[in-house]
Structure formats: C-alpha cells, structure tokens
Length: 394
Image 1 (cartoon, rainbow, N blue to C red):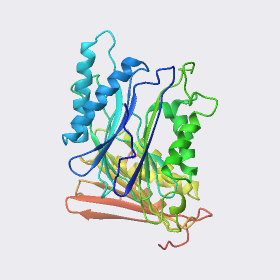
Image 2 (image 1 turned 120 degrees about the vertical axis):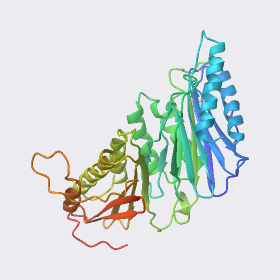
Image 3 (image 1 turned 180 degrees about the vertical axis):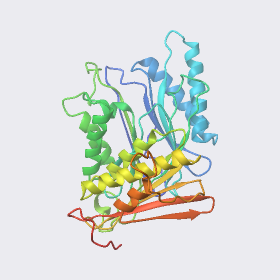
C-alpha cells in the first residue's frame, strides 16, 4: 500500500523511507508515508498516523493517503492540502459514527533548487534536522488539530530551509516512543544516533529502526508478534552539498551552523522554543557562561519585539569559524521602524534594561535600519577559557 522510492529521482537530493508495522499477523496499521511529484517542479513529502492498528485503520490510511496525494497533485499549497484532507476524513468518520478516527500528519513541500521547505503540521511531531557538522535540532513549526476532528480547522505553514549537507527526519511517534520513551527522552535517543552516524542515508534509516527494534524485538514480525508497541513510519531527506554530508563526501570544509525561527505576536510561547533551540545550537560551545548570556540576550530581544511593536520577530542565529575560535551572531528583525535607544532604568524599573545588557555582555552589537523595519544584532566570540578576550577572524 506504500510507495517504492527506487523510482524517485530528486535533483540534488536523496530520500530514504522505512515502515515497520507492529506485527500481529496482518502486518498492517495506520501509519503511512508518501513522496509526491508536484506540477510546479517541486515535490512533497507526507507522513502520517491514523488512530489504531487494525484493518479499519489501514483502510482509512489508504483512503486518506490517496486523497492527500490528489489534493497535492492539483497544486494546492500545504495548508490547503491538509485542510481538504481533514474535511475528507471528517466526512468518512461521520459515515461510521460507531468508530470515528482521526489522523496526525506532517506535509512538506520541497523546492529542490533552493532547499526551501514549506511545512504544514496536523497534531504531529516536529521535524528534526541534522546539520552538515552533525548538530541536530528539533525545529518548532506551526500546527493545527489532527485531521478529521474539525472540518474547518486551519493549518498554518512554516517556511524553513534545508542547507547543503543537511538532513531532515520526519517520522511517526512509534519511532520516538517505542521502548518506554516519551517524546522528550525519545528525541534525545534519536539525536545521539543522528549526531554519531557516519554512513549513507539508507544506512542511517536502518540504524534508526534498529535502535528501537533490536534483534530480540518484533522488528521481524509474525503471527505471534507482540502488538504492545506502535507502528513506525519514517522519511529522511538529505540535500547534497560540496564539502559536507555523509561518509566519503565529508571533507575539511567547515560549514556554517545556522537556524531561523519566526516568533509571531500570537505565539509568545515560542520565545521559550527559541531559547531551547539556541541552547541546542550551542551544544558544544566552550563557555557555558557565554551560552547563558546568549540565551538571556536573545530572550530580551524577542520579548522587546512582542511588547513594543505590532509585528512578528524573525530570528537568525549562525555560528562560523573554527572550534574554540568561533563567532556567534544573533539577529532579530521586526517590522517596526522606531529605533531603540539605550535607557538608564532605576532599581525598581520593570523594563528598559535590554540594550544595557547587550552592551555589557556582547562583544559587538548594533542596530540596522531596513526601510520600514529594523534588525538588532549582537555577537559573541568563543574562547577556550571562556574569557572571549581574543579577537575573532573569519
């Protein structure tokens, strides 16, 4: 019921997929994956999980996968594809009110020429990214309700970029939670595997499956197999890049480590996600004190945008240079054209300390007007002893 990827040829990219049913004789379940050619020269990745592990779940999975493929092939954007798929599944559930089902899904439209990813998510785990230097981040994306619950649900789209040498993992929760893990500990287990792996994409897919389905488990399924665990579906997408990647393609070229995140006015809770993502980006930074300073300053900049403007905040954080002598640059852009001014708040003041902290803790900082918007940035320079006294050079 699932596609074979051997015939899929995506210029400049590689795809690998795995599906492992729970077992129990029928070898079917509600998980699925798909790779869909689109009429605009792009393609889409879809992965999802229909509630249940029985024949009914498998039947709904087949119908939903075909419907989603049809909506995608018509040229709809990711948010519209999931909205139509949700309405379709809701209609099927109404026909069988005795056993209504829902499904989680993540749908990714990919531009192979630029690496741009447009992601829509329906109650599904966020994608994980392995950067060219081995750093792994779970990147937060906007999402909506699982498919089939509300026929009028909205599915906002998040735009990210897959840089040369990077790999994206999307999977169902069976890969994360199998073996008694929750979402948090399961992701930590997968992160270690992704960071340490040195083989090609197919070998990485096998390693991820074997990490949760060892030789004594029901990875080899049969009529007496245990059904206590969940199905697993997984897709890996890798963008080829000169001087970085897997196995023999790895060279001495040092890539830039970069992450981009939008914090909307309606989603102030994503400030916490931005702080966590920055800590993951700085996982091997020499000075823990500098990491704490970077997280504090980032929080100040993002909060300032949400409190003092009516626009969203765009965060770009990147690390360049050799280990031990790297530069961290963080830039936050908003749609306001009023330039900030440093103030001298009193002891009891509840605000006004942002630029004072940046001046005290950052090695360099500035404000760049950009027409009707502006960017505030700061830099920290790594040093092995944590002093950051040495000058940085690219």
